[in-house]
Image (cartoon, rainbow, N blue to C red; front, side, top):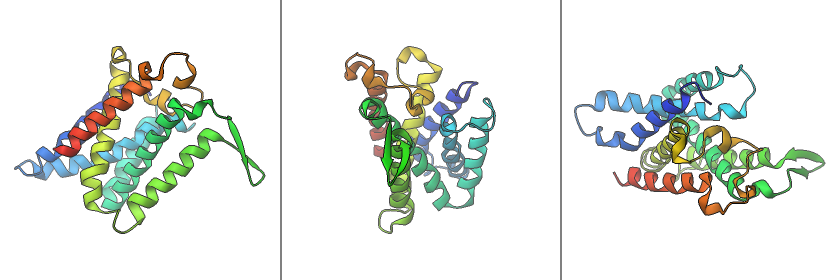
Length: 210
C-alpha cells in the first residue's frame, strides 16, 4: 500500500479493538459513528487485489467506498467487514500452506488461479455466514466477534508496514499471489506471516474480552 495507508489501517484497527470501552460512557455519541467509519475504511486493505484506479489512489478510493457502504446500514457494515476478513484468512492460508500448491486449477473446463479461487470461495462463505444466515448474522456477532477480528487484522498488517522492524507481514505481501512464506526455506514458525497470525489472534482475543 504505502503512502501512509499502513498507518491509517493501524489506527483504525487499534480503535476497533478498544472502542467498546467508550460505548458505555458520554463518548458514545461519537464512538459509534467513528466505529462505523473505521469498519468501512477497512475496505482499503483490499487495494493490492485491484488494478484500477492508478497506484496511490486505490486504497483511498476503496476506503471511501467502504465508508459510504458502512454508513448505509449495519448489514452493509457486516458485509464490508466479512469481505475483508475473508480476504485476510485467505491471505494467511495462501502464505502458510497453499502457495506451494498448483498455481492454476481447472473446473468445468475453466482454468482459474488457485489464489483467486481460494479468495472467492472464502468471501462467498464469509458473507453468507455473517450477513445472510439468520442466527449467525446479526448485531451481536458483528460487535462481539467480527469487529475485534477486523481491528486485530488491520492493526497487525498496518503496524507491519509502519514498523518493518516488527518483521510481520504487510497487506501487499499478505494478499499477493506471488509471495509465499511457506516457500522461503525458513521454518514457518519464524516467518513474518506466522508471527503476524499469532499477534492477530492475541490482539483479537483481547478485543473480544473487553
